[in-house]
Image 1 (cartoon, rainbow, N blue to C red):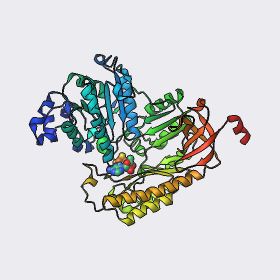
Image 2 (image 1 turned 90 degrees about the vertical axis):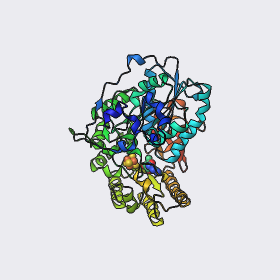
Image 3 (image 1 turned 90 degrees about the horizontal axis):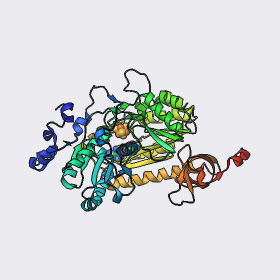
Length: 514
Ligand code: 5AD
Ligand code: SF4
């Protein structure tokens, strides 16, 4: 079956793995939209060009669909998902829906899911269980599952079998189809499933409702072609495809004009930005060099892959200005052998060399990372190499994970001789080092005056304000509510493992101190 046939929903019956078990059980679904995912299709990387769509609009037939109705979206996982939620919220609003932050009030509930580890998926299944009673009380409620989990055959089959309270499932490539999917779900008694397992296009000018008016995410590219052996993302998010620089720059200018204080350029592997352009020799370094000139106080980017982190980018970041001196650089392991099995395509030494170059250009840079422990057959010595690398680099923080097998990835097929007890114990040992180095990094701030972008009241105490430094350190301090949304100066009076406490310094006082 070719792509066109898939998209038209033809021969879908043959494609559904669940058919093998019982054709009869699923036959009713073929009457309506039933386009399930295929990880095998999603893995393909062909030669077709990325199609850029600039003509998104809400069809007349859908206008007013949401009048008098409310939507609720629960987001799991990474910033990419958070940003997709902002786009879906934009589409809902364009359809006439209103946002609500309680499920009880909602006429449509979407779970925007994450597939990166098993526990992320279990949370979603748990939530679907909780929502069942709402659906029983209010059968007209629409319940949808979208995001990365929708791209997995096993998940869709499990939902079909066990969670018949779900009305619609749609994939990461189908977000712009939300009006059609909603309309189908209203019309149909059966579950509507529309998941394109394709390499992916770039759809511009989708509506967005951003969460907050201080910080904004800006997608610069989609997908990932790295295929690290543990990772499901290249299957759920399609191939690497970059947005055109002029579209990105226009979006950043617009955000600056609206008064946003900080933007984060987003992509699964932002360092591969531009590699897919045939007509342009233009990468992340060039893009950051342009964005640096835009009048927005803070610019960040995430997530980097060490392999594609080139010298030009380092050179541009060293110019600082609004480019923040914090780089999140996932290493995953400190052992060259494990890195090889992970297909990270760099060695421990190459990673350390990259860090050396970055530190030479930006001496006070803050580096943070992601680490997976308990990779299949990881030895004690290999794990120790991760600890020693962590110390050698002097990372200031890390997201640490126990390896979680993801069906369809090469690592999931590897035999694994590391017991879960050992993996958990390694995670604890690593976290102890992570905490130790974080506390040390925080101590450096004692007595210093740092710029803080104030995001709002502290979660734990409404009398206290909270914000972040250039290097992404959380600061809690007493100050006037008028400081929210501004960059103010705070004198640090107490340092903790994961945050700083301080006192706001008025501009007048600051001049005196200086
Ligand atoms: N198991 C555990 N952690 C994973 N990550 C990605 N895939 C897996 C997996 N299968 C981690 C990596 C990545 C971060 C986003 O999640 O560290 O950088
Ligand atoms: Fe996953 Fe590796 Fe791509 Fe990151 S670079 S999204 S870990 S495959």
